[in-house]
Image (cartoon, rainbow, N blue to C red; front, side):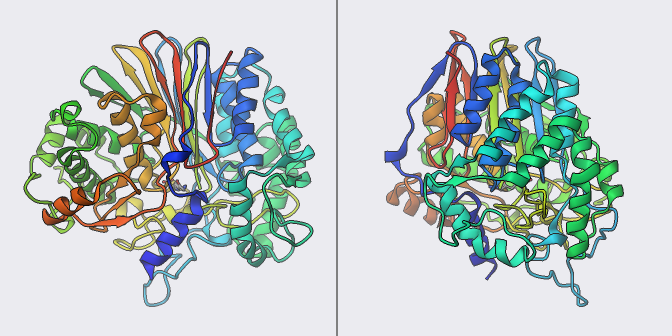
Length: 565
Ligand code: DON
């Protein structure tokens, strides 16, 4: 049942078509700047901001608000996210605008009287909603690094919502697939439902008046236009209507937080990642560390040894994630120990190329002194060399499916990223422990992995993706595809992926990743595989030795790379 639900949700998450060679997008290159996002309109708006002289942060803010309009399954103002930023001078920053547990939340809020997890309560409906962080994050990014006026960055999204935009095939399908949930969770108002009560089709015009008004309040008052005044009132009204628990106090006290990025060396590269409450930076640092000493480029992307090594590394990393990672404002996360290279080498040294290590034989590492205590990504580089990597999310596709009545936007279902009960898998099959249990005001653990890579101090790559737990492993694979296996950025993004997360035991694979004979060989060594719908929607930029930028926009979605002419 759980597996069925998981697969069903996964298919809905991106409304993607299965990966197919025939859909490969052509390579985009530019000398001056690049925007890669999951929607052509959002990429176009980002590029127009760069053309106006805006920097990468300006473009990112404009892209974010545009995605809130044209990619409602994941683009958002009702969710949260993370930014990794490297300025042209080489200074690195990480901004956490992750949602928080409401003040009235509690550890067992998703359990019944017998202590069992109540199905769906943490990921559908008003109880699944975390206090949104996106607007505070955008405001903070702009305050610190923006160069163009805020209004210039928000106006394109207001126009897109007010004048409408033409639905892509995937978006139309996504909206149709979620129609019954939208009706069920929003009895007093209807949003994103075709007014003629028929299914949406490609190129239908979607107008979002209430959302345009909300965006206009944000345009005028920045984050006060969201966390206070009319928008906040509408959020609280929605909570009251359905007995939700987010209060004005939750909204007023929300703040985005600057954190210290995780910076890890890999050969002559520096991997700059998001620290907790995302697991992405630590997990990617561990994965890269585990494979560093092996001759990957000699083996090649398709070889058994490469696949085995990557699967075994992933298995070990997710075991640590489940035990150690949580919101650093609430739990002590042993970051230094987890990314220590001797520790990482020791973890992978137990792998055996002759046979798989079963997940049951792996547990998290131990450290003295420690008690156990639909997402979207955009990558942007501007002409000056500022680079920004942002992943934001509502969690599941279209989040909680709850719209804020009168305000026209969807609320997240991020509470499911907490561990509702130690050892009980969440929507992505991830298990957690005390480190990620629910506490008022705490941020739920994330897998989002916005990443920037430098080589000998020069910008080399900007990368990230949606995909729940598969985010970490997708970023890992795309980085290796480009930097070890010599693929160009588009090929690296398109190359079929696989995913292993410790529990469950099996590794999910996209079509065409392993040949049938190879799979049989690996099965004999003890590896288990299940077929997977498409994994991730990667948006990446590679900087070539010439300084030219190469975009990689995933054919698994409507993703679009646009260079600055
Ligand atoms: O923060 C996380 O790890 C999840 N809420 C991300 C969800 C996600 O990527 C769904 N998108 N496809």
